[in-house]
Length: 375
Ligand SMILES: Cc1cc2nc3c(=O)[nH]c(=O)nc-3n(C[C@H](O)[C@H](O)[C@H](O)COP(=O)(O)OP(=O)(O)OC[C@H]3O[C@@H](n4cnc5c(N)ncnc54)[C@H](O)[C@@H]3O)c2cc1C
Image (cartoon, rainbow, N blue to C red; front, side, top):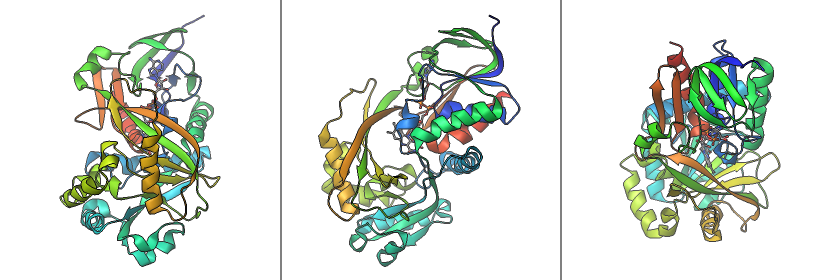
């Protein structure tokens, strides 16, 4: 059989790999995406599908999130992928949290966001413990997709609309342009982008060793509350204000952090904060927690889930929700950066999202990487 030849080969069919394939085909390139799994099974389908702009670190990350959100809006419309939810309501349970929100609104990132007074919270849907809060931040920038459906739909769209070739159940052993060695034989490509997710110990492990990478394990649940208002935007609360760098790096966050360390010590130790996003069937995906290890253990102690549910019942009215599904996910993590692009040679890039922001930033990162590869 003749060796197949492409302009670009992408290793990895998660959101990062798909984003690179999209950026390349938009420039008229012929692309192949190679993944060892039969269907996407990594972080890209285990996440919230929450394209978060507000709260991303000021500067490049926030800018990339804004651009990626725009690409999500374009591509979901073109590929007929439903946007499940828009906007973010960051609840301030405490006055110290409201102070962080007020400080955030003073920054350039506060554009189009607003402070919501407790009495106004009803406008964003019922089901919250509105009267008990010190206020909230509303951001219109966010979008939410159902990742487990959206990622396969995006791959199918790339195949049908742009003739991207997908080689599934195919492991890449060597990726050195102009050739890849795979479990199904060699493939030729002028340029290669490796997007291996949290698998940084296989391809080009020698290059990646310098970044001091580890992995982060997260607990996730799907819950069925008694009622969920369809108007409800994505919900976060105080613990997120000391975790997401766009807020956490503001001086006002220190006072909040001190109070949370006194009152929610166990949550902070487990890296727990609340994100709650809505699905079409009325369930909510909620999470998460953060445990770091080179090889995270496969166990999911219920005590961690209880901490997430504890924050949930302080934000949502009514009794504790029925948990209908639980899972964990992992992503790559670095001590000093949110993402990395490694350049082993002119026609090869290794791209890792080393934070929990790949759904929010991959499209912009991919545009930058492909523009540089084909400059
Ligand atoms: C629980 C959880 C919640 C999250 N929530 C959010 C969120 O709400 N918003 C947000 O922006 N981000 C979120 N993230 C982060 C985001 O999901 C990740 O940053 C993103 O999915 C990483 O995408 P990826 O394509 O790099 O990795 P992956 O999705 O892991 O894909 C990597 C792919 O590479 C393939 N691969 C690796 N090596 C090889 C090889 N040698 N040969 C063939 N195939 C190979 C793997 O099989 C895999 O399919 C979350 C992550 C988790 C785990």
